[in-house]
Image (tube, rainbow, N blue to C red):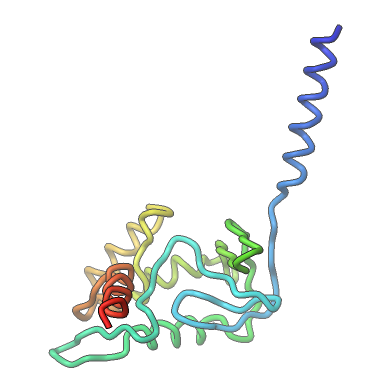
Length: 166
């Protein structure tokens, strides 16, 4: 009897945990904030599964530097600003006010769109789901793939190291 009661308590506890961790959805009119983040419902949402060149990150095309990070930010802003976007929250750190979400516009993944159009690379630490789109963008030389560039994570590390050496 005690064992059944314990099993019932554990089962109820598990059910409560599942309900308490219900999926969080943000939806509303969006605006582009930077190269891989949007504003939605007064919150900053970083797009899950991708990494785009930083706003200050340059790329080289035909031997000339161009602001590829700013162009990536502009492409995202042009895509989402004033339109209804839906984001499934994947990570929410309330202390750091960080939200990472899988966001869609008209059913299309914003992350997939950014990778397919060459404005971001797949973040392989989070997912491999955009590998096909990245390969296609690279082969077609879309966006940053039409230039020479450092992977965004490598560029950020270089910037941090430069900052420490001064």
